[in-house]
Length: 91
Image (cartoon, rainbow, N blue to C red; front, side):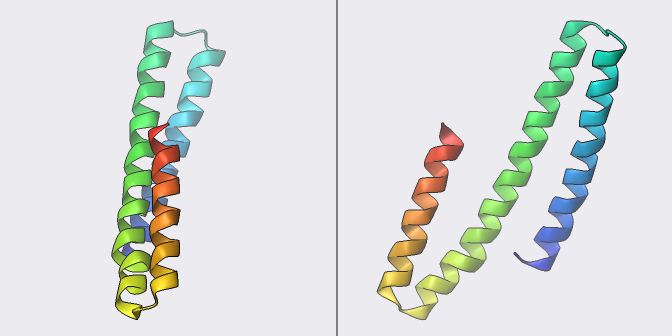
């Protein structure tokens, strides 16, 4: 993973960690269900952004490297890996 991507992802994940702790407090405090669900939705959206950034970095770095290498087996492996993970992301 590229350094700038790693830094950005860690920053987002730390923020998400704080959000999750806040949701736990909301549950402990027996807050209104819709408020909790709203915060859960925000956390899922934030995690999706991290996921997109990691995938973008993977394509820009790992897949691009496989293409530039000229190694057909490595190219097939990286494309298959990407297709597999995108299938899981969609599901």
